[in-house]
Length: 237
Ligand code: ADP
Ligand code: MG
Image (cartoon, rainbow, N blue to C red; front, top):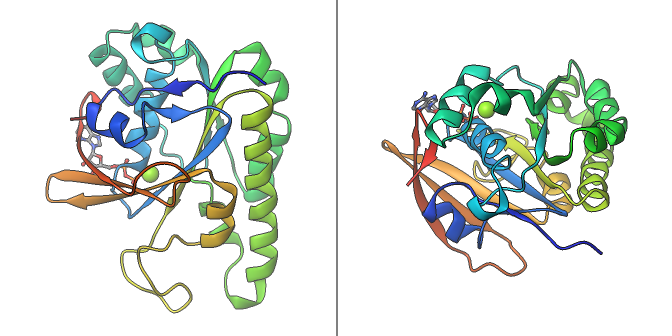
């Protein structure tokens, strides 16, 4: 079994929350309301994973499964500059796969093996893991099919992270107001399925100009919170 690697977030507060960084061989679920910073954290990690080990990275490439068309190359350029990396080279090591529907999202992951090996991928991001499933399977009648398909996807993500010793991030948007199916706004939609397949779960929320991250249900982290900011250079203390 290979050693577990960690990707620094580039901030002291979030690194403390994650006990050093985002781990390989694990799925980390990042959930929160729209605008909480899920996608900005993903973009920051796309850059940080490329840093050498001495600087908190894994000298690795990225597979970014973009389901909501929110990947922004110009954000990578800004963050890479802020972190002292060459923007063009940094972009070159990010393989962006746009998923057009949930079946395509599954297919991208099923066929990711050669891409992972050829590009020394050390981080897979699925932003959002749940969105396409949610929009395609509406209403109570389709809930069980949706949960089965999502479950299959999440387990494949988990196996991929273990097989290739890479870190996986699955984002999940929660409703800002309670709705009839899911009640508690702090409980992510698609809830249990994603939670069960994830090793770590982090809840992000807005608090004025700042953001708060809370480690939830971790097997070995204390239940604690970290305060961070969203800046031009990515997540920051
Ligand atoms: P989520 O994915 O959780 O819905 P995002 O990660 O897209 O949320 O966060 C969006 C927020 O990120 C914006 O409301 C803004 O506060 C912040 N943000 C985005 N780009 C920048 C930037 N270039 N400089 C500073 N803050 C930014
Ligand atoms: Mg987003």
